[in-house]
Every structure is written in C-alpha cells, then in structure tokens.
Image (tube, rainbow over all chains, first blue to last red):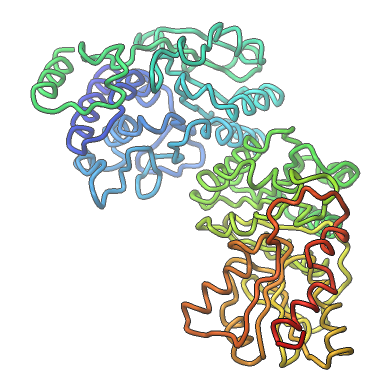
Length: 267
Length: 309
C-alpha cells in the first residue's frame, strides 16, 4: 500500500474510531496523518510479524492524544486485525484515547502527558549507540508540547551527545489546546531555535509525500540529531475541520460524520 | 551510606555490562573511580532530572539496568511523572537512587529535606521502595535491586550508620529484618534512623527494663505485613519510626495493613514528623532532636505509649 492510500485509511479509521467512542483529537490525527503514513509506508524498518524485532526502528508518538492515528496505521500494516480498531475508547478496550502499548503490538511507548517522548527516545538512541546498533529512533512531537521544558532538556542532551540516529518530527499545525501557537507561547523563530541548539533542521510541507519520503529518510549529514519541522494543517483533509481549535475536541457524528467521510473518500 | 552504595554498584558493574549509572550532575568526589573503571557505564545527564529519568527509561527498555542518582527530592519528586508514566508503567528496569533521606541535608533548607518521598512513591504501582537502615543493608539492597526486574526507589541516608547485622542475617526485599528482640514493644523503623531506634532500645532496657523488638523495615513497599502482624500480636505495642512525615509513610502503611487484617496492636504510634516543613536550620542530629526523633524523643514516645511516662 502506498503512503497516500495509507494516509487516507488512517484518516478514515480515526474518524470512525473517534465517532464510535465519542473521543476527541481528530484534528490532531489529521494534521499528522501524512507524516505517520510516510513513516510507516516508506521509512521505518518494522515487521508486523515480529513487533519486538531488535533491529526495528523505534517510533514514539509523543503527542499521545493522536493515538487513534497510530492504532490505525499499525492495524493497516498488519500488526493486529483492523476489526479491533472498533473497540477504541470503549469500555473494556485496550485502545485508550492516548496511545498505550499494553496489549497492542507495534506501539513502542505509551504517552499522553506531553513532553515525555523525546527524553525516552534520546535514551533509546543513546543505548543504540552503546550497542553499536544501526536502527534509528523517531519521535513525533506536537508544536504545543514544545512548551514543555523536559523537551528542551532532551534537546540539549541529544545535541551534546551527537545522537545522529535520533530523528524528531514536529507536526507544526500552528494550533494548540486553546488557540493559535503564536498567540499562546510563540515558538518562532522555530527553525533557528533548533539549529542554535545543535540540531540539523529540515523544514518541509508536512502533507507532501514525495518530499517527506526523501526528507524523513535521509541520514544526518552533519553528525547532529535531526529535526524535521513539518508545516501542517490542523484537521487536514476535511474542509470544515481545517485550522480550527474546535476539532481538537469535537466528535464528528451524523451529517458531520457523513460529510467528513465523503471528503476523505474523494481525496 | 552513599559510599557503600557506590562501592557495591561499582563491584557489580565491573562484572555486569548491563549496569548504567546516570547522575543528575551531583556526586562530586564520589563517582571518579566508577567513571574511570566503567566509562561506558557512567553518564552525567546534567541538571535535568526529567530528561534523566526519561533517558533511563529509554536505555532500560533496550536491555540495560539503569540507576539514576541525585540528592534529596531531585531524582524523585522533581520527575515524579517520568517515574510514573515512563519507568513504572513500562516496567522499565530503572532504579531511582536518592541520597540524603530525611534531614541528611538538614542545614541546606527544606528544598533538601526528603521527608515525604516514601508516602508519595509508595503510592505508585509497579514500584518497589527500599530504605535501608545501615551500610550492610545498602550493599545488600543494591545487589537485590539489580536482581529484581522493574522500577525501584532506593532511599539512602547520608549518615554513616553503624553496622547492625549479624553473620546469619539474610536480606530479602519485602522482609523486615529482626535487629533486636523483645516482648514489651516493637519499633518498626525504616532508614538510617535505625541507629536511633537501637540506642533508644538500649536505654529502654537499661533504665526502664523495657525490652524492645527492633525491625528494620528496609522495604517500605511491599511491606512485610506478616512481620508487622506478629509484632502486634507478640509484643506490647507497635511504634513506627521514620525520619519522614507521619502522613502516609511507614506508619501509615502499617496502620492500613493491620487494620484491614483486623490485627490491632495493644498500642500504636507513628513517630515521625508532625510539624510540617522545617524552616529551622540545623544538622541532621539537631533537627532529629528538635522534632523528637533523637534517642530521648523515641524513649519518651515509647514510655508514653506504654503508660510509663
């Protein structure tokens, strides 16, 4: 399956999962769906038959509230049956709203409280270097979670120890919990911040699959850890969800659900 | 206790490449030999405890046994959520080590008083809480934690507690150690204040003809409930002694367990801190005295419990 089809399926699954379970964060799933699809379709070395394969690339979703998108991607890759997705957010399910590894093959790490993924990913990258292992560690962050100081502790650490096997991907959709990032805690000049902290920074269109394929996969040129700042649109793929805070929270049901599904199927 | 811990860990690490020690930029004059002999097993993560704990989790999940080290509340409360969500929830082989329990750093002020950590950390699932009473227990605990999979908290007093072990003593996680026996009263004690309990027991025997059973409860979680129940049944009263707030600490743990079992000691008292934050400045010895946690204070508490004051 190519990455574009995978992205479409991730969005459709997530729409259905959040609708069935009555959960939030569909806008946050849609903004990262292309990033996740390209990663799983073209970049990450993973094996659905061997989720704990030691040589796999590690992928941590630090913006754990978008967990529905990871569950969908893993199901489509064959880590577990797609039918299990229907239990998301339901009583008795293992598929919690924020991504959990317990009982779900392929989830590397459970998150939900922001600012946790990058330190753990840095640890995995550090351990890989100690072991002389060649796999990579990818950590997907939201823009809003770059407010968390723990990320900046890890950013300093990774640069100091030149963790060139560590790749951060930022879903820079410019909207956080209560409003625009620029009006909350401004991140700009964002590229300059990461570069000045000692990272190799790549700035891309986070919905352009052909660009993402080359940018996400190419190794560090400088020996520094790599940060891919991906410009994205919150709610990408459904016209009335795009660039709104509301769809960080709202669940699509009834006519909204039908219209969203039609738009995704036409895309 | 710090030097005993480092010496023991170095001995283990030299033979076991899975061991990794991460410090949060503390331990001046303590880690040089470890870093020199095991350079690939030592890491200074800087003054950044949240990252240190996240790193430790990531490294542990890749197959290593990772010790994080700092003082007082820095490796515990400062990064509590990393211990909870990252290490404990993932059953990561992370051993959080804090040097300076209770008033070890008394004169440095309340930022450096580790006086609520047992209560807070024992509430976390998947976490073993170990608080040794002397250097022998520190060495034994260090080895035991290496052998015990999962996340642990090791709470070390800065004091140099005198040896209390007998040749036949066995250290087992989750089992209280009988340090002295007696039938009139039991003092269940955790941490370096064991030393005070022993001095108090000696005075109680010599001056007041009260024979005290001393149990070193080096594992605050899981609690040795059976030993507590036996003490309640077999002796004239049960005192929990800790250099820690009485709220939710060892005494709280004992009370919860015994009440639920329907085993009620004849008399029971939690001896610990009741005064809230200590803004008084002073050495560990001074502050113990100020708050009734010195020999005289423990003797007075014992006599009051037994109605002999």
